[in-house]
Image (cartoon, rainbow, N blue to C red; front, side, top):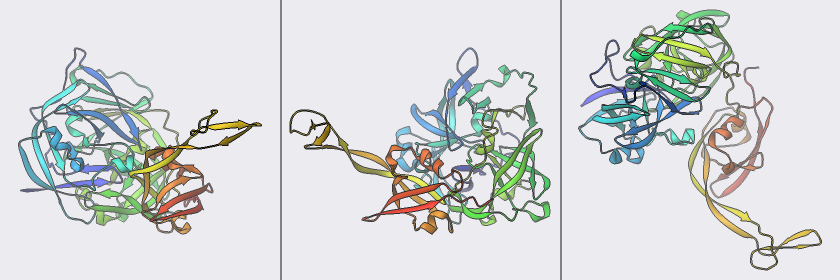
Length: 451
């Protein structure tokens, strides 16, 4: 049995480090686009700054996270998906991830058929992870069955149009570069099959060059590894927070702001930056010269062309570019946690006494209200920042949120609820929660710790 290492940044932010090949490591098998134009467009969903694409594996339609920081495709086997996929030629290995837990058992499978739009690969390796904790669906409110990255990017030119939510795949030999006055074209560097880019960040009034992993599988903006000798350290305004859940446990660190972030001529201001505790990122820091990760909340502000064959990346500003960098001001992390049986009223207007209503002098009198029972999503507090407004108000991990500002939560998607916690400082939040057999009400105001 072999030991390999998995590193996961932020919530849903994955960085696999278990294939230590030099260069790009192109294999004999590759993705081929099966049409005359040698190009195809695939629609994707953008959820919490993450790209979710449709992927067909051995004839089964699934949803995958597109992650530039992943070396080989992974299937999350918490629903025994691999049984449906009929995977074969398996080998057991172990993965070690962020957090302080133990390695987990993983099944490696060879010669699987992957299809993304018109792009197909006939002999793809994949890894089935048997760990119920590695399940992104509750945090995203959308089913995610796996992750794919390097194997797609190395074979095709991949254009990510965040504005239109379209992925364009092109055979490298058929791709033609166009002149672009408003774009920036930068060189990529590769280590262990992962793309790195050079940038500059202004911290404490000092501009510092940094080498960053490009991590489309991370929902944060910027992760930096603190290093006093390089001047990479948080300013005095920060708070300690849950940053995500790794394969081997939770990851914590500082949340702060960087005055500016530069990708050549492109400048972003007041950027969110996280500094994970070194305890949780030992494997990620093994690459000498790496200073952190560049993730979805910055990447989505550009339409991007990844060309691994030519080691180039092209960035063009889109309508997200000037969007303010917000953060969760409540201290609450929510997850979809099963279903609740909800009683809803159905009112009918009629002239009988069988579950309908009658009108008398302009007043509706309910004779026998009818009800229907429906299964609705339940949203549970899974992380609660110490000292946050929500914690001070008396909320606890495990509380099931029934309503927010007097509106039942089952009317909202998970991401619609979460965005309410990113509102303006001072905004009032009223929550009704279920705690055991009790229904409780709490109220607090959002707090900006960086003012």
